[in-house]
Image 1 (cartoon, one colour):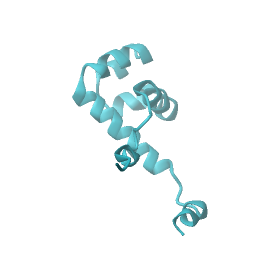
Image 2 (cartoon, rainbow, N blue to C red):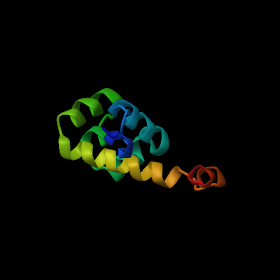
Image 3 (cartoon, helix red, strand yellow):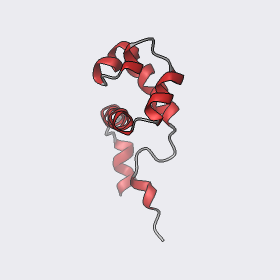
Length: 86
């Protein structure tokens, strides 16, 4: 049986890690502008964000999509990645 999760960029990454990485990369202010949800704009914290995102699928999807786009923009296409394909 093939490993189906290998194509999932979020496989093995917790929601807490996603939020922490986004906050580190963008900061709360910019994150609140990119994903317009109150837990990022009004007295933001990791714990309040986790609570909200765990029970709000549409908001979690937006955060996960931003995280994937951020990873794609950050990942350089260098010679090392090219040599892996040979």
